[in-house]
Image (cartoon, rainbow, N blue to C red; front, side):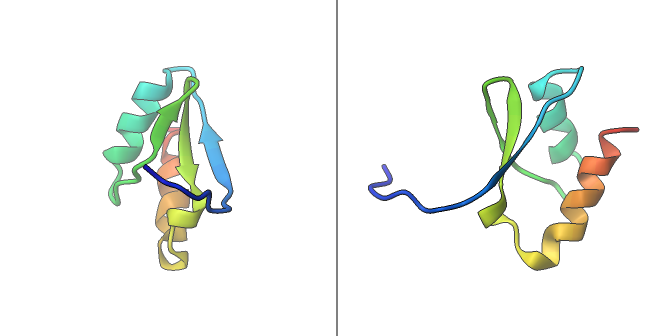
Length: 66
């Protein structure tokens, strides 16, 4: 178990289909995006996303709208 808290920001995503469906869609993206489900939303810890991967994450999130 972690013994210290690391500062970070999180992006939360919810959708009409529900958090489980959003999570599955992100995982099925061309570049899979792995988050966690909490309180009915998908949570992406931005500390875990490398700058080189930001465009792929944005593309996966935009793909949720289609």
